[in-house]
Length: 348
Image (cartoon, rainbow, N blue to C red; front, side):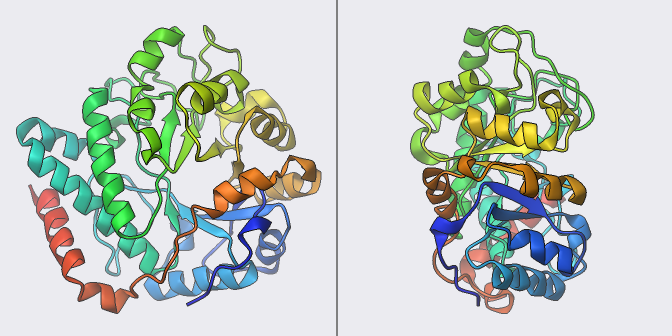
């Protein structure tokens, strides 16, 4: 198993790779001093042995780099088949809560444990989960990715999911601050605007970020504009990120959402967007699915924007200790029990 090395060297850029193995261009980008993370997608997965070989190659190319994935469950699960457990959409846990609170709490913990232990067995360090957006029934892009409409239920189920992640040695990332569930527009292809005021958003959508306290390892802001608070989307807003840091006392990593999304286009070029996000208070910026934009960012971003404080926060997300390999995991009692719970939930 590859050992993680100099954590202080992690840069503020997270980028992706083209296919199921590394190209020379992939290696060049991963080794760039501004790179600190690699995000994987479904196109990077054929089977488990290939995924393990890919993550090992990434760690060999850049020891200590953070390997992440959007692997929430439901329709957002990047790795499927060849042993990966089919994970439920989070709304299913919220529906179970409405019938049986204690069963839902247990199931959420088991989902988090299965999710994280399977990823870690394949060399993945972090999943961008849980979704803390509220289910207003308005947002197609959020939809059943949300646990519930009630922010109290969202908080308690997400805390249980995070407990499962932690038991498997994985950190967490709450998203999309301060809330994406109230707007219909999809920030992947549109620029969503939420016309509500600050007090309403803080009392409802942003409440889970406050109630979590020190339980959140990382946060990803929304590419949503809240014009009654600030003219910039939350991920580019000094005001919103200042609220997160100071008023809500969040001390973990702030990731930008993907700078290639339409919701980020208001900031200008990918270099302009990254500069705005880092200057507003993000620790790491994501650029996905556009290799040419990754090259532009690595070439054009001012290295002075890479702070030692941010690098240390990012490094703290890299798991410590060796995970169980896949074969050993299948024999682990905790995993087998948790997986049975998850499978029963999917069959319900």
